[in-house]
Image (cartoon, rainbow, N blue to C red; front, side):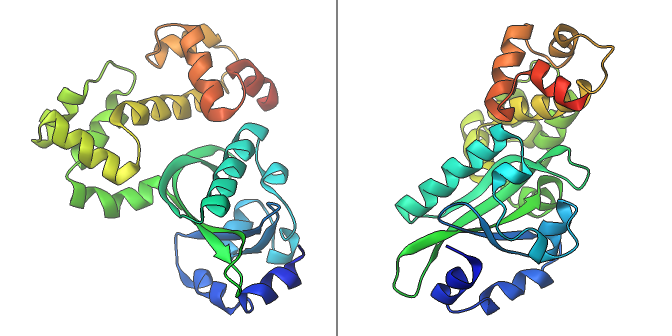
Length: 241
C-alpha cells in the first residue's frame, strides 16, 4: 500500500500533524507491510534526513540493524493482528549519533475508516527524558539511580526496595508498572547499553568487557547481548570497525 492510499483510508494526514508540535517525541506510522507512511521531524532527522519525503517508504530494515528490525517487526505484527496497543515498551532505539540508547515506545494499531487494521503508529521518547516524568509518581527514582551507578555489581531487588522504602514485592510491582520489565531485566539492559560503548574500545577483549560489566563469563554476556542486539559482541564490534 502506497502513502496516498494509506492516508486516504484513514481520512488524510491531518490527524498526525499534532506530533510535529510535541517536543521530545518521535512519531511514525507504518503500513501493514512495515513501510513508513508518515513521520514527524524528530523522527526523520534522527536518521539524517532533511524532509519526511526522504524516509517515506523505508522499513525498519533500511534504518536499523537486523536484530532490532526483527524485534520491531514482531511487535508491529502483534499490534496489528491483535488490534491491541503496546504501551511503555522499554527498548533500544538509535539516537542522532546512531548509537543505541534506551527509549520508551508506544505502539497502536492504525485502522481505516472501515475498521480494518492497515498499519501501526507509535511514539518514541528517550528514557532519560521520560523518566523525569514517570519516576516521582512510582517512587523508584532513587532505585533507578542506584542501578545506573552500580549496574556492574550484584544488586538485589531487596537492596533496591530498601533504597526507596518499599517491600520487595511492592517495589517489583511498581517497577514493572513503570517500565513493563522487572528490575533484573532493567539491570541487564543497562549492562548491554554499556557494553555497546565498551566494545568500541578495540584494545579491550570481549571477555574483559563481560567481566567488567558484571557478567559471570563471556558466554553469558554473548547470550544476553545477542538477545537484545540481534548480533554477538564480536559481530557488533566488527560492524564498528
